[in-house]
Structure formats: C-alpha cells, structure tokens
Length: 323
Image (cartoon, rainbow, N blue to C red; front, side, top):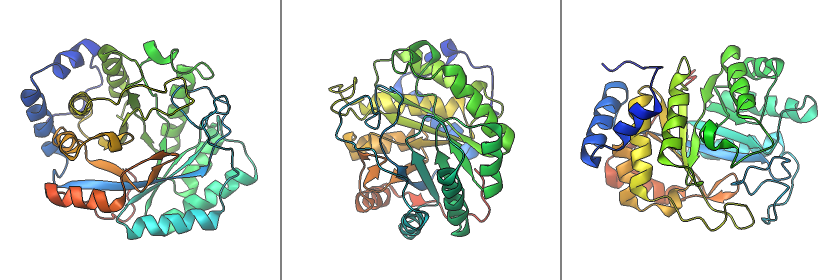
C-alpha cells in the first residue's frame, strides 16, 4: 500500500502531473482504491453564516468590502437558522455541514459564542461540523474543539510564490500558523486551494508540495476552480478546463493518498463528463446545494442524477467521525 510521503518536491509532482492523462488517472485511481471506497462520495453542504464586509483583499472573493460585487454585509445568522439549514442538508444526504464567516479573524464575544452553539447543534444532529472563520488564537481553537468541531477549513489558496499576487492583507505564514493552531487543538485540518487565478502549473505543484509537507497530511483537501465574479480583480477570467482540473486532482490524490479530495467550487462550469473524470482522478467529495457561500453551485437534483449515472453512492453518516 502506498504510504503518505512528506518530502514531495514540486519538480517531482510536476513530472507526475505531466504524464499522459490515461497513465496519470490510472496511477491516481490505483492509489485511490488502496485508501478509499471508489464507489463512495461524501456530500457536504456549506452555509455562509456571516456574509460580506470582509476587510481582506483576496482578489477572487466577492465578500471583500474593497470590491463592488453586489454582496452586502450581513450580520451573523441565528443559531436556529443555521441548525435548520443543517437539518435540511442532512435530509438531502450531506454528512458534513460547513459554516463560513467572512471574517479576517475570530473575535471573542457574542458572535463566537453563537458559532460554538452552532457547532454543538450540528454535532447533535449526527453530522460532521466544519468551520471557516479566518485566523484563530490557540484558545479559540481549543474552544472549538471542546464544542465538538470536526474540521477547520483554512485554505492556502495558492503557492507561496504566487500568493502576493492574490492577497496582500494576510501573510502566507499567518495562514500556516492558523493551521498549526488547529492541528494542536486536535481538530482535523481542511486545507486546499484555488486553480485558475493566473498561477502557473509549477505554482499548483508548489501548493501540493506544501500540503504534502504537513505531518499528518490535511484530512480534507478542497480543490476549487475559480468562479470569476464581476467587480473582483479576477473578473473575466476563463473557466479552468476540465482536463486541467482533473490533472490537479489526480496529482493531489497521489501526493495525499489518505486525504479526502473535495471537488469544490466551479462545478457549474464543468460538464458531467468532466466531473466524471475528476472522480476517476480521485475526487471523493462534493459540495451540494444551490450556493457555495455566495457563488452558484449545481442543485441537489442534478448532483443526485450525476452520481446515479456514474454508479456512485453518497457516503453514509458515521457516528463520531472526525475526518
């Protein structure tokens, strides 16, 4: 069985990425079958619990207060509303419920206390609970862990080399420090990136090499394709071709054999056949529902039809799962 490595270089991964597609997908599928059930796909739902007004300048993000995108700043949703959405997600087959807040960093107080109540409520429903709230302190990470949080999402977004072209208001090292705090708390790590932001293939491989250097590897790795939003600095960019996305996913699967690789944002721009190729390449999770935070996403009916056509099945709930 292929064991996780933590010493991948970007050059090694580039050589794998550039293999003939049939060979690349075969290798990725072989690794996938060693560590995962190839028939199962985890369904996740992501809710924006605090939308808009973020002070960061992430070039891809419609929630930044610096850009005119039509996304208005809203207060934190109520705990009751979040848990109602979680119940609906569970009924639709999701086993992980993710809550995202457009914050630079978590601030102690009423809103964070409400987030902790949301986490407790989601876990009481039997779902995995994930949050993405920005930067954390050690104490905040500990409190989230005590509330039962399954995973914390904090994406690196791109390579360290390309990062300054996308974000100037937060250092790469600050992202890495937050991830280390999450790991110390005992909460599992959800960390990935976005392709299609003007980065090179070498940048994509550098990102994967960074993720593979984590010990242990992130339990969850979202691979997002840029959804270009009018009003952001990255508006007007063409969608990532499906084959490029599949190559990224296949390389991620080989580099991160035990991680759940999540085919995340950008699926509306993919054909069913391109999504099928991504599953063959090792993706084993998708986000369902009409929206991912503020950007459109295929509806649940379309996803059910696609999985059925491919002979894939939603992953069942696992009591007490923390991955």
